[in-house]
Image (cartoon, rainbow over all chains, first blue to last red; front, side, top):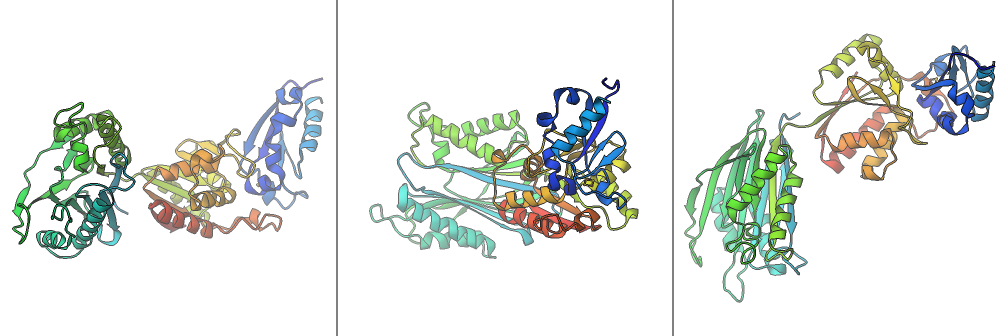
Length: 88
Length: 397
Ligand code: FES
C-alpha cells in the first residue's frame, strides 16, 4: 500500500547540519528510490531547530518527516525511513 | 558615504607595431578631499621616446595639480623641463588635465586644462555641451611655436560624462575611409549614439567602444596611439549586507525597518537572521535546492530581499574568493558566486552585523575554519576596499 497524501520531508540546510553531513542529503534525487521520491514533498529549511533543542538526544544533521525530527541522518537511514513511511 | 560616484576608466591601443605607448594616462584619487585628477599626455612621435616625454609630462602635470600652484605656471614649468628631441630640436608633449572635485552636494566641479590635445567632450545624459574655453598664451622664452593653453571650468551633475582623448582618435581613418579623419564631430556623434542606446553605459565600456571604433577606421592598423578616457558621474550603486541577529530581540524590528528603507540591493546572510526577517516582513522563505555546492549551503528566495544565503560558511568562502580576486565565471553556481556578482556590481557596501551569539556554533565538532562573524566581515571589507576599490561601512546591532 502506498499512502494517499505525499509525505512532507524537510532537510535542514542550516550551517550546523550542512557541515556535519547535511550536504550529502541534498543529493536525494540520486540516492532515493524513484517511487519514494514521487511520493514525497522534499524541501530545504534553514535550521529546523534541532540543533538548539537540548531535549533531542541526537546530533545534526537533522531532517523532519511529517512532524517528527530525526537526527544523525545519513543517506542510507533516510532511504530506509522514507520507504517505510511511504509504504506504510 | 558619498551621494555621487565618479566612474573613471580608459582604453588604449598602441600604434601598429609598437610595444609601448606614446600616450600616457594617469589617474589618482584623493578620497579625503574628494579630488580626482586625470591626466592624458601624448608625447612627440611614438614608441619609447614618446613614452618618456609623455610620462614625464603626465607625471608632472599630475603632481602639480595637487599643489596650489597656478596651472599656467605649472604648464610652463613642464615645458621647460622636457628633454629636447635631437633631430627636431623641440621638446614636445601635449596634455589634458582634468581636476575633478566634489563637495557634499551632487555637483562635480571640473578644472580642465588642455594643451594641443583634441578638445574634450562633455555630455549631460546624451546631450553634448558646447562651451568656449579661456585661451592663455604662455609666451614662454625659447618656445619653438606659439603655445596656447585652453582653460575651462565645467560643472558635471549626475548623468554627465567627460570624454578626453588623444589625436589618435580624432585622426583615425585619415586618408583611408575618411579623408580628414574621424574628427571631433565624428567622435561626438558616435559617443552620443552609444549613450542613447545605453544611457547607463560604464566608462569602461564607452571608452573601449570608442577606441575600437577608431581602430576599425584605421583598418585595424593604428596610425598613432589611440587613447580615450571617460569620466561618468552617477549615483552610487549600493548594497546592504545583513548578517547575524541583533544582540537583543527587541531590535529585530528595527533591523527589518533598515532593510526595508535601504535603497539598493539587499543581502541577508545567515539562517537565523533570514528567519527573523522573513517573520517580520511576512514573506516566506524558500530554499532554492538547485543553488548549492558541496562547500556552500543553498541560497533561499524571499520577497523584498535580493539574496538570502547561509551565514558563516558562505561568508568565509566569499572572503577567500574576494581576497584572491576570483572571477565569478570560475565559481560553481552557488551562493558564493551570487554574492560575489552583487559585490562586483556595487560601489558602496554597507554591513549590518548582528552580535547575538549563535548557540549552534558552540559545538566543538564544527570546523575551526568558521571564524567569528566580525573577523569575516573585516576580511570582506578589506578585500572590497583594497582589491576592488569599493567604499564600505559597518554598523553593529
Ligand atoms: S542547523 Fe540544522 S537544525 Fe539547526
